[in-house]
Amino acid sequence: MGGTGAQWQAGQLDGLLRQVRHHAFRGAELDAREVLDWLHRQAGVDVALVGDDAGTVELATADFPREILRTLAPLLARLSGGELAAAATQTDSLYVHCEALGAKGPRPVLVAAGRSAPTHEAVALASHTGSVITLLRRVQDADLAWRGYQHKARQVRFAVLQALLAGEPALARRMTTGAVPPLLEADRLRVHLLHCPTGDRDRITRAHQDSSGYHGPDLMVQCPAFKEHLICLIADANEDGSGGQARGRGEALRRMVRDNPRYALGISGPHPLSATAAAYSQAAHALAAARTVPGRVALYHGQTPLGGVLPRRPSLTWARALLRPLDSLPKVTVDITRFLMSMPRSAVARLLDLSRNTVTAHIRRAEGALGLDLDDVRSRAEVHLALALTSACAASEPGDHHPPLTLDDLLRTEPAAAWAQSFLRPLQATHRRTLQAWIDANADAQQAARSLDLSRNTVRTHLRTAEALLGRDLLTTGVGVHDVVHALRITAARSA
Image 1 (cartoon, rainbow, N blue to C red):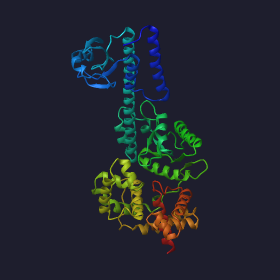
Image 2 (cartoon, one colour):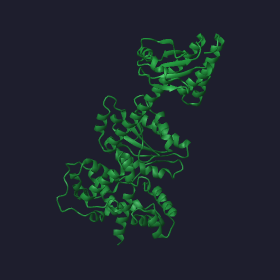
Image 3 (cartoon, rainbow, N blue to C red):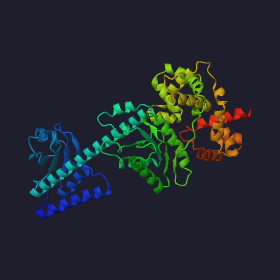
């Protein structure tokens, strides 16, 4: 090993540090192989990093004589096991310097082999190189642990969201025993649905994350179904939404939208934790409207839902009769059916981390029990209304003991007619015709365009305008389609 003097050694160490700083400045990882190659160039030795007492070579310079490791095996075992810190020997006309790295066994060993005896300066340089490799390994281990923690934190947050969407806050609390997020202790929440570029979601989530993996009193979850959506569950301290924390987190989201023209934000009304699914639906509707307003932020100001104006007991009796066949199906099938009412099938598969074939099998089972084609938009609208009616009523609440009315009977009532008229009032005749053709085409824009003798882009433009005027999401989650189906059905029946 060549080189003499403290000045030479200092110069070489300065070069090594410059290389480390260069990688750190670029935000890139400095690979241990680069450090070994650097030592080879500076000291004229071949170097290997031996990972354990079995002599496994993790890294080595190109010409390192691996055959010497068999002779060195007993020495390497002592170094790896902690009996020795460093050792020098000769084998096969090579001068070998070995140094154990780190404190935890089995320790990796840095092995440097050269044709001439090493100088004190070169040995010191090899020792410093070993220290740099040790630090690099610790940084990489820490980075790996950090990435693992972030992955687990995302999984827990998503599990909490799924439990809340299923209307089971108690289950969400049990899943987080020992580190229950403050959100689950809140009485009410609002869903803020942020539309942003997919790559921004992780950055935003980390920027607001606390040491527990949550977001203070709130929760941010990257939507797996819609890649540009960040679902923000924000604790609502007061019924009017004026709680300090809600205002603080909500205001931060508003600032993001204000500062970035690619962002939009839909905000639900306040809901109890058990009604998170309803809050999410409202936020999706608000987001559809937000994309067209100047500030790209919209609060949900929807009218009373159709289920709220129908005669209570007759409508509940109808809903329970329609859904009764689902009682004999597995809960997962029922859950998938519920999710299908508010998002496309492919989105349900991504949300539940299931294959599309598995989701389709469960849907076919539900269709067989209900006697309905859930690919048909009108059938989905009926099931969605029935689920909304039964979810809003206590399971023990008595129904009507008279023969159940049909849905057509329920929709002929005066309150239903008034609801439909109010719902459709913002639309011009052109947009109503487009919506009717779209529903008649089973929500297929291409087929609707052919029936109207318009381009598909024109039809989609009309639908986007209708989204904004109605405050309903028609083209992303599609959950607003159900209200359109019912309103048009009521109107058509009145005019027949």
